[in-house]
Image (tube, rainbow, N blue to C red; front, side):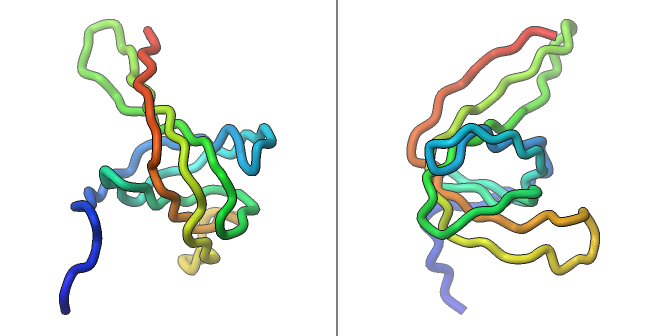
Length: 109
């Protein structure tokens, strides 16, 4: 099978929060399944439609002594939505979103 993905995916389980969908504020906490330079796949309790503009924040732990985190604030659009077939997670769906623009935000612990 030929791989057609634009960028290499990394299997990383990181906290993600959807903060805006279709230009409306939301707060939906989830977890990434994988991410790449062009997008993210994550689980979250979210109602989303294909093509919805979406803003999400991925939190990366740091190894600093102060326990700070680095947040990646991302803007993109929803390209896939699937029910969570694993039977766990209480209403979570699997969402694939593009990563079109981003900025790093440092938060001190």
